[in-house]
Amino acid sequence: MSSQLQTNILEINNKLIEVGNYIEHIENHTDIIPYTIVEYIENVRPNDQEVWIPFDMPFSTANTLEIKFQYSINIANADDRVFQLPEQQYSWWLFGRFQNKFRFSYGTSQWAKDATNMSSQDTNVHTIKANSAFYFDNTSKVTGMNFSFSQNMRFCNCIGCRLFYVKYSNSSGTLLRNLIPVIRKSDNMAGMWDTVSESFFMPDYDYGFIAGPEVI
Image (cartoon, rainbow, N blue to C red; front, side):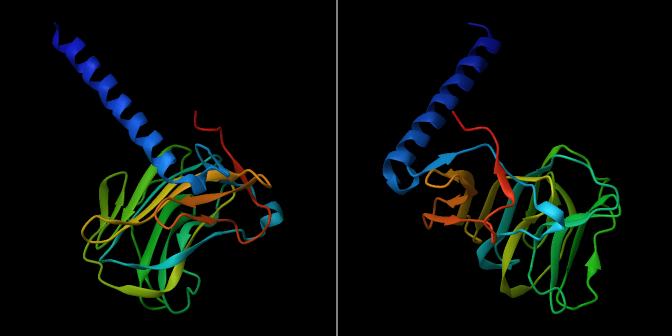
């Protein structure tokens, strides 16, 4: 048996294990049945109305936040957020687009710091991770952060922003929240389902998000 064939068989076995784990999770979490899992949800806010996905936890650099996202369109000179705290005046911690580049700002005062090595905006799928450091697609952009905030986070106030998942874990790697995109079947509301607390996080307005393709 060739090494390539062995590799292919191993990949197939791993996929079968993933599918089995997924089915077991659904069977053990019957509350998710009223929801249809989709690949992503996308902000299509009308007339520049702010529409967020609210969250029930604040951020601490002792924990790790991980988000998979994509902008479906580039907008010249956009100023928007993939994540942010609600009170910028007293604490500054955000990621989004600004002056045609991705932007990460951080700090505990009104005059916060900006990461100066961010790339130009694009429409690719990216993963960002934040703890005591900030990573963009596994590349460290900022290190040495040490602070906690009292305000809860919020996500995706960006026209054309797609959320694929949001994970928040403690220093031991235990998931505190694991948000996946879904549609609530009763009213077709697009939002994020948390597999840890078994809660539905819906937009703070009754409109503004659409759902991507269903996960088959």
